Amino acid sequence: MATNSNMANPYRKSDVHCMDCSNQLCFVQQFCSPTWLGIINECRNYSFFRKGEYIFHEGDRIFGLYFIQQGKVKVVSAGLNDRMHIVRLATDGHILGHRGLGAETYPVGAVTLEDSWVCFLDNASINDAFINNPKFTYELMMFYSAELRKTEMRLRYLAHMTMREKIAECLLCLKKIFGENKEDGSLNVALSRQEIADLTGTNAEQVSRELTCFENEGLIAKDGKRIKLLDSNAIFEIIACHKLNKELVF
Image (cartoon, rainbow, N blue to C red; front, top):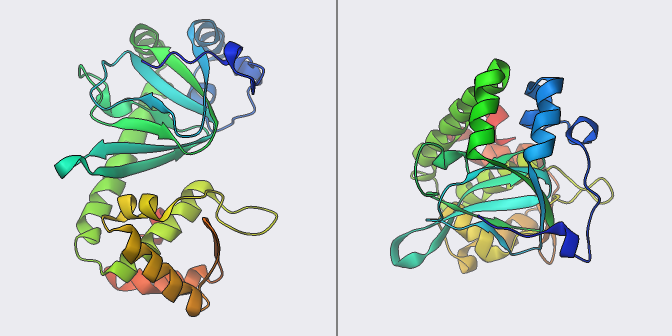
C-alpha cells in the first residue's frame, strides 16, 4: 500500500471531514449512514499523489480500497512483453482497487494522470461498512455490474473496430468520463499519444495519424496534448455501425 503523507507535501490540501466533503459522487458519502460517515472519517487515510505516481502496483498485497477525492487516474495492467495497457480511467468519486477484493494481490495498478488526493480504507473498515450499510453494499454491487458490462462491451467491439473507429470510441469515452473544460471546451484531461494507444491497443504513430485525419475533417482541434471535440455527433457516427449503447460512450 502506498503511504504518501499529505503532511509532507508542499501542495498540501487541507483534509476535510467526510460529512463536509464537496465530492458528491463518493460512494461512502452517498450511501453510508451519517453515523458511519463519522466512523469512516476517523479510520481513513487521506493522501496526496503527484502526477505520474503509483497509488498501488499490480501484484501489491491488498490492504483495502481507494476512493478518489479529487484527481485523475489510469488503471493499468502489464500485457505481453510487459507492454502497459490502460484498462480503465477514473476521476473524482471513483473507486480504485475493487477488482482485488477477496484476492491476495491487486490484478492491476493505478497511476495518477495529474496531482490527486485519495482516501484509503483498510479491509477491516470496508468489511464493517459493508455489513452495517446495506445500501452501500448494494450500490457497490451495482457498480461492479456496470463496470463488467462496460468491459465486456469494449472487448467485444474493439476487436472488430478499425483504427479510426477505436480512436473515435476513445475520444467519446474521454468526454464521458472527464467532461469538457468550461473555458475552452477541450477534453478535461490531457493524455499523451502513447496513453491513447495504451487505451485502444494501437501505437502512438497510428494515434497521431488518426488524430490528424480527424483534425483535417473538422471533427476535433488539437493543441499539444489537449483535444477539443468539435462535432461529437459526427464522431459517434463513425462507430454507429457497431450499435453501441450511446449512453455508455457519449
